[in-house]
Image (cartoon, rainbow, N blue to C red; front, side):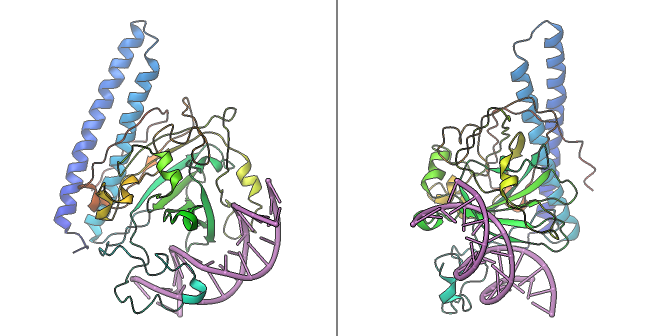
Amino acid sequence: MEGGVPEEKCALVAELVQVLEMARQLETHMAVVVQQQQQGGGGAGGGADQRYRALVSTMRASIDRAVHMAVSCCAEGRPGTGQLPESPPSGGDGSSPRSGGSDHAGELRGRGNAAAGQCKKRKTLPKWSTQVRVSAVQDVSPLDDGLSWRKYGQKDILGAKYPRSYFRCTHRHTQSCQASKQVQRTDGDPLLFDVVYHGAHTCAQGAAAHPSNQQPAVQEQTTSPSPGFEAGTAVLPFSLRPASNKPTTGADAAATSSRFVTTGCVSVTASPFLSPATPESQLVSSSSSGYAVGGGGGVAMAGVRNVPDVELASTTNSPMAMGEMDFMFPLDAADFLELGNPASYF
DNA sequence: GTAATTTGACCCGT
DNA sequence: ACGGGTCAAATTAC
């Protein structure tokens, strides 16, 4: 059942391709309109135009990613071949063997409670991913998404040049917040990071960050200009060193901050996630602009513009879930270069 | 002194 | 058996 019917996936691909084409057309149209406005002497609406274009580009990027992932599933008949971790089949159970309730692994480290019996997967929390690009190798703190994360592990991944860092909500124990995320620098592009979120923030900061946002997926581009950036509670950076190197202090990695673009996500794997009645409904990846401003969470990041060397790419890691999602992008403001045209999908 | 990070070891799924 | 995810003691920073 969870394997996904190939036909269904192909249909999804076709649908996505169609949407992508529409986005392209819209983008082209926007370009023409903007050009006409500029020739007409209009200078005031430039910012808005750029935002519109950014929106379209973001749409394209997201769709592009989704199509690629769907295609990979379609072509190979199996999930998980994308560049990002694939979502689990979502067995349907809401409990996790270990992290769910038994944090005292020291005592219960034995085999995840055989009594539970039903526990199959390590995690069944909703999962979605984003890619974050920084403008410089040192710019890692921008990966802060406004929420407080605590690093609990780092591991070298087979075949990956850089280690993967594991974070979980600072309030995990105090407020039983199950949110966690994994951050890993991509091999090919040192400035690009894959961020995979697991679970929604059920803690106070999560609610504060998204007071009224009940959308499962939020896409965003946020940039933090070096001068105006104020780091409140620094959220944990992660080592950017190659896996083979010695650990860095982390301080240097956290020291800088500048512009970045993050795009959020999109897909979620667990169906309960969609229910507004569940905590998961507060899911967000990196949230819409302004959510972090004001110090509710961890780092305040103001929306910015004019970032010449950033680009974004959003990813979806569960094409199957997309059809059921609202899939909206409440983009606010952003400036980024559009991605190149997607390659042929088939 | 407290909190966060590092890192080796353990656990689990494939 | 292997690789990824998590834990927790030790270390470091504030």
